[in-house]
Length: 599
Image 1 (tube, helix red, strand yellow):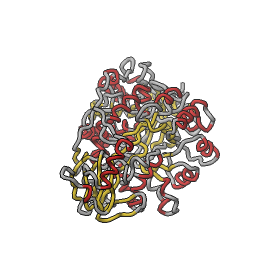
Image 2 (cartoon, helix red, strand yellow; image 1 turned 180 degrees about the vertical axis):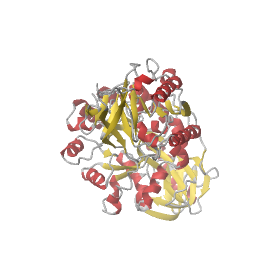
Image 3 (cartoon, rainbow, N blue to C red; image 1 turned 90 degrees about the vertical axis):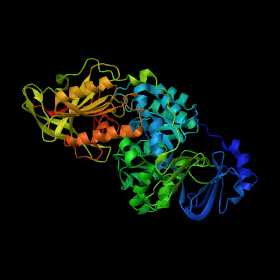
């Protein structure tokens, strides 16, 4: 059954009556240290009265709001902070459906999420977005959907299962849970004045909604200014202080992310902590968090703690995860603070720095207590065809992963995708590689990568090289999570194991599998679109953690290496990527040859 939120207009008569003491509240929190993110102060021994799922009274004494049936929560000095908001994220990256993602993050104090389901858009198109949107609206917390803007993310450089059009964007803007346009990843298109990109932005702005940004380039010159003129209102791709400063100076919100593998807060928050820029234009987000992080480390509470550890004032960090986010999406009067009329989303904690989450109230009812979920998170009945999306054509064999050398060559200089720990960008490297029986082999930390087409069953395999994972011995890892086109990425040192891993994922309908010495040592099944599981988060997290351990058993030493693996086909983030069309030079946005010389 869908969760409904009554509007302020529908509830206003009772809210006023409760605040005036004429009728009792549904719930009153007594004696809390009220963290007011509007005035940036902590008000000791204050009461908070809630009615109809909204705050009615916030003040020194709510005794006049208490009746015989009013539920009273004795805070005894605990801090009452607004429910935490994630300003930019992809549910699919958690390997979970919206219902299970909500179940995982609610105990961590997240009560609002702004989600971009462009992962499923690449696999199932507008229909997939609608399914995500519909399940999101069923949840006991606020999940707002941004309509994906770029599928494919870079036309001409990759092929997706479905393409998103400007007409799709215009249609989605009429759906009840759509809050804006998802990250505009095709930044070269915007800079060049691409008609479709500008039409999508125009349709969003005409609907009075927010346009998400994604400027994944270190160039802060003319191209950046052209992108800003194209309409994106925020950006989460900054990796250094200058990026954050440039964005806010152009009227954009700088979104600072801490995901499972992206550690971009520390390098940018100095714009506030040291340079003294106005913190109202800074927002904290996660972008991508896998299930293991959610279950074992947290969600937005983890990001806020990290920002504080990086020197940010706790109250400012909380503003960046609450009212700043709500204001950015035009929802300041609806959520993001503890103030009359807003949705009654509040978290009780004993410490503002370490942020233990003791009780979570969403829309006026307790949804989590001492780390345990207290409510149901309803599921959609996902259609059968959404669980049958891995089409390889013929089963893969060892020779599909061979890289023929130029005739007569004994060695080659190959272009190599260089993984950078804890960052989304890669490096465009080169390596001198040996040729054995006419086939180029990996060497010295360089292993193979393959992009296996899985949407149309064409049987196509594009091969290349990658370094930085540290894999040793005979191994392979395959994943149908392959941002953003979500074909299948296979990385390995053994072509036999690479073929076995690819075939295994075709059999189970998608996910992640790790092979070593000819046998499977870890498997995470992701049957929904090859991206998500509707199993409980703890079960998926356990399998994901086993997968991480299996990668380490194969020699990998990177932090959250799976997240790095899943982005190797993301052809809108520099410098070098792989797609179903070939190797992509993202600094030039063009396909490039695998070999530099052939002697």
